View 1: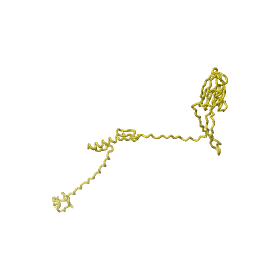
View 2 (view 1 turned 30 degrees about the vertical axis):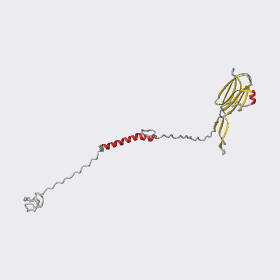
View 3 (view 1 turned 120 degrees about the vertical axis):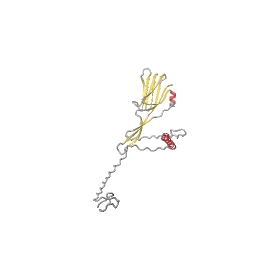
View 4 (view 1 turned 135 degrees about the horizontal axis):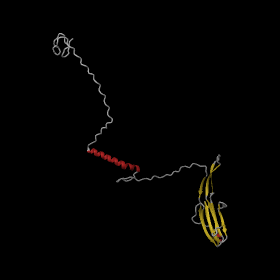
Length: 270
C-alpha cells in the first residue's frame, strides 16, 4: 500500500490527496519513507575517584568576638592548670602560688629491714668486752697499807698490743707489782654430734684465745730486763699474780696486752 509523501500515512492507491494531512499525491508508486537510523547511546564515562591528595576542607571558625573570647579564656585556664596544678598534685603541695596555702609535707617513717642470714655450720663467736671502771679500784688491805705505800694504780682495757709506760726511781725497795685481769670472753655456737640423730648446737663461753698481758720491769739506763710476768702466750693462765723487785734503781715499767681488762697496782716499802 502506498504512503503519503508528506506525513508517511497509508493512503489508498487511487487517492490523489492524503486523508491525513491533505497533501497532494503524485501518481505512481510513492517512494518508501526511509527509516531513521537508530542512534546508539554511548555509555557514560566512569566516575572519577576523589583525589585523596586534596587538602581537607577547613572548618569555618566562629567570627563572633564573644565566642572567640570564651575559647581563649578556656585555653588560658587549661594552660594554668597544666603548668601549676599537675606539679602540685605530684609533689604533694610543695609548689604553691600566691593566695594558696601549701599542704603540710609528711615525712614517711623509715623501716629498716634485715635480710635473714642463712644458717651456717661455722661456729658463731660473740665477744663480750668487760666495762672499764672510770676510777681506779684500790684494794683495802690492812697489812699492805701498813707495810707498803701505793705509788701507781691503773684500770684499763688493753687491745691490739696497746702499751702503757711508767717510770720510777726506786729508793725504798721492794717494788711490789700486782695485777688482776679479766680476759675477753667468747661465746661459741658449736655443732655437736654432727651427722647423727643427736646433732644439735651448744653455746660455750670461754676466754679469748687472743687474750694476753705482760708486765716488764726494765733498767732505765741499760734497758736490761729485770723482771717480767704476765698472762697468756708463754705465761701461766693465771688471772691474778704479783712479783717484787728488791734492788734499788731507776726503772721503766712497760705494760701491754690484748683482749684483757687489767687492774695494776704498784707499791713500795714504807
